[in-house]
Length: 119
Image (cartoon, rainbow, N blue to C red; front, top):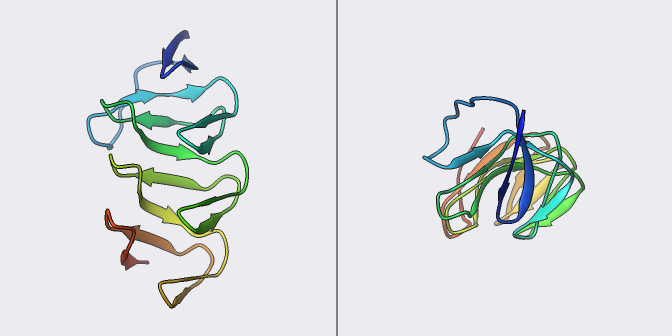
């Protein structure tokens, strides 16, 4: 196990990691719950950054509203390089753009924040 820093955030790197995200820098595990670029990232979970050091993938350590959508603790969020949500699972029933979505629905967003697909 080794330690490293990205954006001043201390990370524990447990070993070689393969991931399916864009060619970002992958950090295996946050050492502690940390707010990164306004997102409440959970310790002990995979966190990924783009080469630009913008957050790409994280899991929430606390309930949080992001871009007007409520997410519960433990929700995984995937972001575009712009910082907008790309993919997320809803933690509760919600109305987005006038459409009702059920809890646990996976939602894909375009870079403008509009829903493009759900499952």
